[in-house]
Length: 231
Length: 231
Image 1: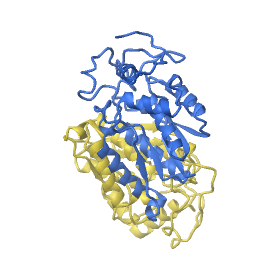
Image 2 (image 1 turned 45 degrees about the horizontal axis):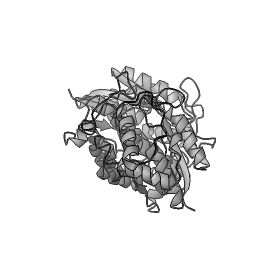
Image 3 (image 1 turned 90 degrees about the vertical axis):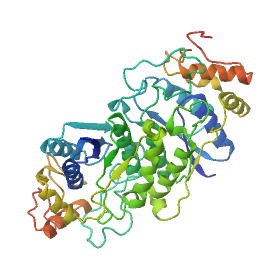
Image 4 (image 1 turned 135 degrees about the vertical axis):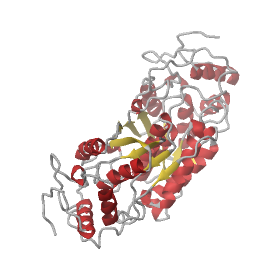
């Protein structure tokens, strides 16, 4: 079975992506990032997701992006709460982390190279996160070009890197539906930007609001423990 | 004066690049990487270089690439020593770090974004380091495309990222000559892959051999303290 690197944050999108990569016949090398994020609890969720999917390979990179700041996830800026769903998706939210997916894909490329993988999976999504520039298809295609030039295999013309974005055109409900069919245990995932231990979601940040709406629209019971029953 | 991010390793190439960026009228934001490299002493050299050039802004990112290994700079693999100059530059040496420049440029992009810089300088060189795939012009141009799509300014079409590679077609002697004209104090720099404290070069790794040859060819006295007077 060919190897593939899957970026696993601990959220429901990347859990579904990991299940898709497995189903497509890849041996999954999960990769998580300890980047100084406010919601470091998601790293515990990443471990649970990897274990529950029976994935044997999992690396976590320590990379302190707080040195740059510039985001409510890595600096002392409040995470937006209780925004209307119409408001979410207009403009670039403060939770945008400068160049995050470029950095993460660069690290995934390194992990792929040492494990002889030509496939990288990332759970980016053009619908629910339209505010993030580095989730767009044109960004992903440009990075694929970089990956094909950057590595040992690239210089020898042996590498044909493919960056898989199976969720690109799914909405949250469709992701939840797909993950459910594949047996993902969403109770193990954590989407919240401002969680409380051990695995409690705030219920009011953009990520919580989109998650809750997704379960509602999918008609699937939401297993999340929300602190706030925001409606 | 516009801002520019300059990747500063502590070696002579990046010291010269920083001097060039200053001379071209940029306010320099120096960026160094503590990536678990065997030659961590170069970080002290980076600080000296930044200070000696009067650069006010300097950030160092902690990113532990030892989690991937795959290089004699980040894993327990011997650094090649006393290779012939003919041998150096054929094939990809074990000092290649998987996807390093992709990762470093991703981090430079983040630093550029938070400091409103549209210019990144990197001391890659197609001559002396022809073995590294991520030093080639086509790689740099592909990354520029990524940078123009990845950021806030990118999505708004405001960003016109330029990655400057002023040393791309210089040999080591030409770099030393240029740096000397610009007043770079090369005694503050450290090129060695296997140095001893406080600032002693091994004299036998590829980087030492190329450095020594460069000073000889430039006809400039070499201020380096080599442990081994390898000829």
